[in-house]
Length: 234
Ligand SMILES: Nc1ncnc2c1ncn2[C@@H]1O[C@H](COP(=O)(O)OP(=O)(O)OP(=O)(O)O)[C@@H](O)[C@H]1O
Ligand SMILES: [Mg+2]
Image 1 (cartoon, helix red, strand yellow):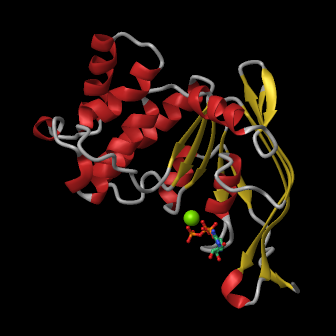
Image 2: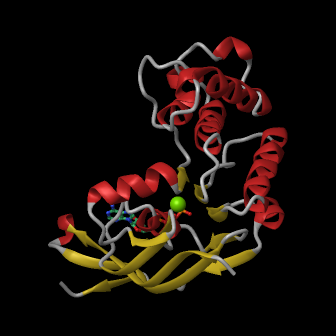
């Protein structure tokens, strides 16, 4: 199997500054491997550290110990210890991350926002906009909204713009934190098709999905987080 993510001994403690610097252990010595063509669903109760694990995989969070090795353009990169410049390169071409909420950039239209990642990769303007339009149509964002910045969109509309902006890139690795949480049934089915399509094309997918039916439709494997939450004496 072609490995894409290898996590070894990953731990994450948070320091509670308002509690006299007490340490709270959330993730403890997590080992995890994800192959190309897999969709691994992280499943654990609320507050167990699912989003924390994804943020460590994206190097948004610095782990307390352990490594997160990402297969990037023919080499392994430990994004937990790599220099910032290299982490940005990995995010640019290898790691796509859909969070539950869109980070809205003021004054940029929806169409520009979705086409932007392709333009940044040097894709020709017309081709980039055609793909953006195709994705927005597929995700049922009405045409009248395409020229408007998504700041005033509904939660579900913003989430679909967020998905379009990531899925337009064909990333080899996808990290998904509840991407279907505020979608209606038809759009949820579309997003499930898109994620399964990416996986069938060889993407390695790691996702969090609260909905049992969505998990059933997507997961090739379930990964449970052991309950590690404990207070460690400071
Ligand atoms: N930056 C932070 N500082 C302090 N504590 C944090 C921080 N980020 C997360 N936590 C704590 O870590 C725990 C796990 O949070 P996380 O968001 O990973 O949970 P989750 O499993 O994704 O839960 P949910 O299913 O509700 O989204 C929570 O108790 C949270 O308060
Ligand atoms: Mg979460």
